Structures are given as C-alpha cells and as structure tokens.
Length: 453
Image (cartoon, rainbow, N blue to C red):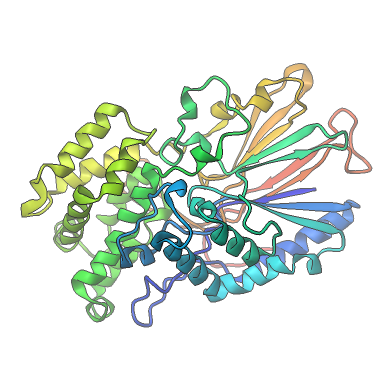
C-alpha cells in the first residue's frame, strides 16, 4: 500500500516572532499520529503486508525563513555553488535546526523516526525534495542532517526527486514527483516546451535557483521582516493597524491564486488602501533597492525559465533605472508583482503529466502519477485506451489555504489535510482482475473549528 503526503511545510517561527506573539504555522503532532493510526487500521483490515509512506517534497520550509536576512546570503543560490563550510551551508543548517527545534515539528519528527511503532506491518518512509526544500541537497552535511531528522538511512548521499513504485512483476506502477517540475517559475527546465518529459531529470537542473526562490524570500519574507525593522516589535504589538498588516504579510504563501496577494494585502480589515500603502511603501522601496544591487538576483533572473528573454531584460532595466530613489510608486510594485505572479500557473497539471515518458509509453505499466506543489487536491483521468485507466492524483497540502473570489475582492480561510492511499495491483484479496489496483484520495478541506470524525 502506498501513502503520499506532500507540502507539509515544516517551518521555524523564531525569526518572525513579535514579542509574545508567535506565528507558528505547523500542525499539531496529534494530526499526524491520528493519521498513522488510521492508516494502520486501514492496512490491517485489508491484510496489507507493507506500507510505503512517501513525503513528496516541500516538507521542510527552507526557502521561506527570515534567518536568510540576517546576512548577505539568499536561497536563490544554485546548489552546485554551495561549498561545504561556506556561509550559505551554515545558514541552511541553522534554518534546518531551527525548524527541527520548533515544538510541533520536533514532536512530529519524533513520530516519523519511530514510525514503525505505530504499524502492525512493515512500513518504509521515503523522502523526495520539492522547490521549498531544494537546498536540502546542497551539501553532504545538510543531506545527512535532514535524513537524521526523519530517521531515514542514506547519510550524505543525494536525496532523490522522484520515486517509481513497482508492481509484483517489477514493472513501473506509479510515478511520484513533487510537481514543481511542471511549473517553470519554480523549476529551471521549462517542460511545457517538451513533447516528452524524461523520467530522470538531471540533478543539475533540480539544483538551480529559480524565480520562485526570489519571490518567496524577497516578498514573502523580506516584507514582513523589513516591516518589523521599520516600526519595531513594541509598536507593532501595541498598534492594531500595524499588527493587522503584519499578520497579512505573514500569510503571503497561503493566498491562492498567487496573483491575488497584493489585493489580499490591500484589503486588510480596518485599514484603507491609502494607509496600507503609506505603511508598507518603505519596505517595498528597500526590497527593490536591494534587488537592484544583488548579484545573485541578476544571475537567477537571467536563468529563469519562467520569463522570456525580453521580459527579463525589461524587468532588470526597470529595477536598475533608479526610479525608486525617491520612493517606489505603487504602479511599479503592482507591475513587478503581476509580472511574477503571471508566471505562476497553478492550474491542473494533467496536460503536462500526459507527456511523462512512463505515460507516453503505453507498455510501461505505469497506472498513475502523483504529485503535489499546487496545494490543490485533484484527481484527473489521463487516458483510458482499451479500458486501461491511468490517473493523475494531486496530493494537495497539509496547511492553511486562503482562497480568493474570482474578482479578488474577498478572501476566505480553509484548512487542508489531503490523504492519498493507493493499493498496488493484486494487493487486496478481493481485487478485481479487470481493475487490480485502486486508490483513495480524500481532500480533507474544512472550514471552521468544529471537529469531524
């Protein structure tokens, strides 16, 4: 039996704390323990002998941490440029340790390390990387540290980016990726331009920094960090307007679609748009000033697969133009955010999944492709030639989602806890010979505080 969890986004909360206000976005460990017990009971009832539990990327939130802003290093650095003992490696290790020390994460990681205790059959834990934990593969020391956190063997060897699960005959049955491969904002290779997507994409591609790394740190993290620097922790804690805006800035990554983020900021309850801009304008000004002089930003932007050459040139020219010397005008920030957000396409990935080599090859035996990344759970039929049904399954996320209305005027709050369970071919005694495998995808989207069984 195969279980896939993705986009857990374990994160540190120390760097964003405002005095006694701690913005801990990590789920309670009881959520994971309850799921382990649920899986075990489900597996026992179906006489399952082995469970493969796959953590399918963006499990650690390495890119989105204000610890980066304590020095000159940034997460938009290629893995191959990070040397053992370098300041970047030290920063990554510091962030990883801060994540591991977070109470909810610490207790959850202990569950993963002792996972066999909660199962009556053999369970194997697998880890693959996504775009937010790309840097976990930067050096042997970081890789060993990450594996130790989860109790996974392998030491300092490279951590994979895809997993192929096989049936009893040894044929590929299921391909698991994180899913950022289909998103050129967060992947160095634009697979949208490829007729067939290779199953084995080189590590050198996975290790490259992307436009998404810049957006995450410079807007998702720097804005809130600079906001604290501008007004001070005491003032923010004691002023309702400042605290409301700070909370809004802290929720950057949860807004869907990403293009709605500025509307989300400028619709802060109790704060009109003019006042919002007055308060956040100094932060935007400092960010664009920093980007105009940051060598790593220019390098990463130059290799981005998400933007055309002309678009990259115009964006660099605009940032370097000096227009921000007297303060950044709102239209410029809006243009920059729209330019970045337009490249973030989080619609269904099924049309790209159809190009996977294992799917194109009708004789491969591959019945499904599973990925996450978009935070939107989904089940889509890839093909059904000769009644050979093949499916794409998106594993959603285990974190909050802030959905926007179509016109971006209003925003909601949902909790997501998606569960994907797959039975291997002929794994169940009562398996239908015509359809010898099966899957269950439970989106687990909820609203409100009531508890449900």
